[in-house]
Image (tube, rainbow, N blue to C red; front, side, top):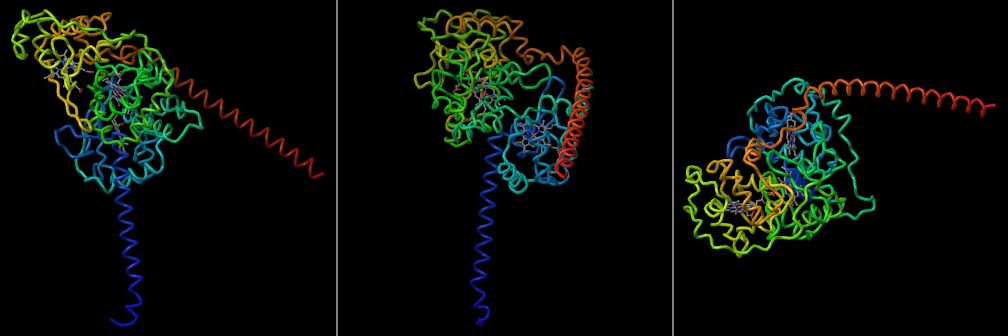
Amino acid sequence: MNLKTLRLLPLAAFVVSLSAMASQDNAALIKQGEYVARAADCGACHRTVEQGGALFSGGYAIDSPMGRIISSNITPSKTHGIGDYTEQQLADALRKGINAKGQHLYPAMPYTAYQGMSDADIHALYVYLQQGVKPVDKAVPATELAFPFNVRALMFGWNLLFLDASSATLPTDADEPLKRGQYLVDTLGHCGACHTPRNAFMAEDSSRYLAGAALGGWVAPNITSDQASGIGSWSNDELAGFLKNGHVTNKAQAAGGMAEAVENSLRFLSDGDLHAMASYLKTVPAIASAHPVLSAPRTVVPVDMTTLEVGQGDQASLANASETDGARLYNAACASCHGRDGQGTADAFYPSLSQNTALTGGQPNNLVMAIIEGISRKGADLEVNMPALGGDLNDQQIAAIANYSLQRFGNPALNVSEQEVAQLRRGGDVPLLVTAMPYVLWLGGVLGVAIVCWWVLARIKRKREREILEKKNALNRRFHSR
Ligand code: HEC
Ligand code: HEC
Ligand code: HEC
């Protein structure tokens, strides 16, 4: 080695360590992006239909009242994914709901929530989606909605009306953890997508922020700080624990869409972030629900139900058994796990039904849906399964079990009919948008005209104001130059 190369050695070492640092930075960025994708639950919708399909390859159909909306392939595939997206184009898709082709996305993609995403998070997410995810060169089926919803340009008017950037309820001097909590709840976690009711145009009703909403057959409960009908009486640890595992002993369990949110997203968040979310939720202005909830849990006296035995644990034979007595059905289909007295097991792995928001809440939906669909959920350190009995029990039997459970363990003011069970099975009430279609079309036209008029008038007004200002300035200038 001559003297010249020796002198270059430190420089070479410097370059090598720089590039090592850069790749370390890049790895950290990819990790940060993965965390953002978890917190924002991109995988919940951009998953494949097939079990075990590749991450983010899309094709999952979201049933909307307007038809099925298919999620896109967001792997870095150049042919079928977002491999050609620039960071700005990803930012526009997330914040404005406009894809790289300039098309308006349907709000099934929650850009109304993501509009508040920070530049740093979008940057990390971009690096992760481009470099940390395997490309999948596979097309997803096209989304074909009925007229007029297939006209994507209509979303321009909808965005003008409902893409409302002002959702902040926190004072500007709130401390950092609270702000972080709000960012995680409102922006990344888009909790309002399920927990805030929607208006006739399917936009979130900000006047009832997080006050609870119907969701298919399920109900996403009121999670405002209201003491009785919201989460005002929950401790921060209980809330954070619920988000982390979907289970709070003698309080609530997560099923339906909430089980999915826990499994796909929330169980991966840091304890600090989960506690920030809990603290923020406790500051959300209280809104009381219209449906009265049970104020204190019932004391349930155990009864001897041996006389009610009908092949306990033999659920499959129930539907054929034409048994319609709630007590007998409960004893056969539920008591093996939840106990005859509905108190569950001592370790609370099988939960109490008398201290459970699905039975003590103001609506019976989640009880009925848990019976029909069962529960399957992975939390951070708890995995649970309750069998889906919708195939084994008919509507009349489910209504009988639900009513027996409500009368004995839950809110006795509630009652479920066979017809209501049938309706919940079909996915709950048809939203107003479909039943009110003729009016909406008419109203849409009127609104469209109103928007155009308002826009033209606003421009004229602004032009006139500018002219007046210019005239004034000119006068001033003339005055001063004298
Ligand atoms: C609640 C469901 C849902 C979630 C959560 C979601 N998306 Fe989407 N996304 C969709 C749907 C549905 C579409 C297609 C919408 C359409 O066809 O108008 C879409 C479209 C997109 C597109 C446009 C693709 C194209 O080229 O047309 C991008 C990019 C995208 N999503 C990225 C993301 C990222 C990144 C996340 C997480 C931060 C995310 N999405 C979370 C449902 C979702
Ligand atoms: C996909 C829809 C969906 C999303 C997204 C969602 N939730 Fe839920 N949430 C539900 C449903 C449905 C329930 C009722 C679960 C049950 O009782 O089985 C629920 C229950 C809850 C409960 C328990 C309330 C009670 O009285 O039992 C809390 C707390 C909660 N969610 C908080 C959140 C937070 C915070 C977020 C955002 C990070 C969130 N949820 C996102 C659908 C959703
Ligand atoms: C094989 C055991 C098993 C059987 C049988 C069973 N459950 Fe469950 N149940 C569970 C488990 C496990 C959970 C969830 C516990 C958790 O989330 O931590 C659960 C949760 C529930 C919840 C809470 C759901 C929510 O949305 O909050 C209700 C209500 C419920 N069960 C009712 C019933 C009824 C009624 C029956 C009979 C038709 C029944 N269960 C049968 C195991 C069972």
